[in-house]
Amino acid sequence: MDRALVTGGAGFVGSHLCERLLEAGTEVVAADNFATAATVNVAHLLDRPGFRLLSRDVTGPMTAPGPFDVVFHLASAASPRDYLRLPLETLRAGSYGTERALDIAERDGARFVLASTSEVYGDPREHPQREEYWGHVNPIGPRSVYDEAKRYAEALTSAMRRERDVNTGIARIFNTYGPRMRPDDGRMIPTFIGQALAGAPLTVTGTGGQTRSLCYVDDTVRGLIALAASDVPGPVNLGNPHELTVLRIAEEILAVTGSASRIEYVDAAVDDPARRCPDISRARRELGWEPEIVLAEGLPRTVGA
Image (cartoon, rainbow, N blue to C red; front, side, top):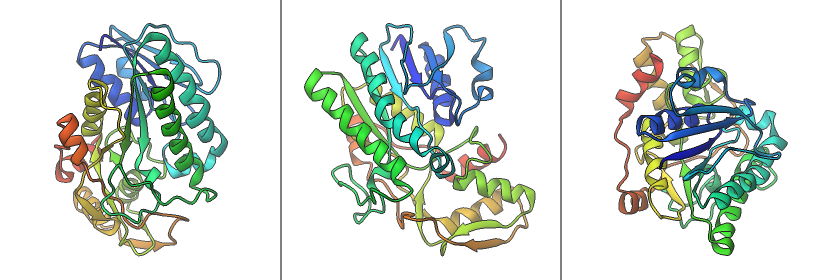
């Protein structure tokens, strides 16, 4: 991969991906409209040879100076707070944005990697979730703007592979955490960390018995690059199969931060999945990938960032 385009390149996962690609000797063009991202995420890369940051909205006319060997499409609001604040923009990122990014990949004969999500499984009735599972999604609920945007993006990516022979791969990313998550983005890990450090109550939704599977961002990025370097079409689950309750995660953050904050229970979010855990057999078999960084290592890195 000599030259890569990363849409959403100034976002949380996108900035880590740009960093890893540059370390591997790949020239990187990052495109972002900064709706949910910040220049500070890539400030340390701006003077690096081979890195270029473009202010671009992938839902409009998308110009990017190619040619590229690989196009990573990560542009989208990803946290519930953001996609509920930007519902139409999120739908456009999954539809128009995916089409624009696919057009660039087709133009250059590049490998295309779609960053999809475990949210395509909705509130799953299969556990753990395999890629063959079609999901249990409320198509008109508030979360649908993100869930259905990604489901459509997968359908469009698959159609471009079948009809136009575009070299595509789909990654279904499960809960990812690490440095550069915005403290106010509404996701569980930065919210709990911020509350713990401030001495405020940790607000656990529902009973706290719902589960999540947390994957450190460096592992997620390794998976995306492994998918890009392969000819695997996917979808492929990228996540940590070690399942934890939300209450246990809150307790782990209290321990890491040394906080005396108490836990406070609040109402569950609408359509909040009760269980979330990936089957990563396909990633192990076809990409030789599995997560390496355990929570006991990843949480301190995140808190100290």
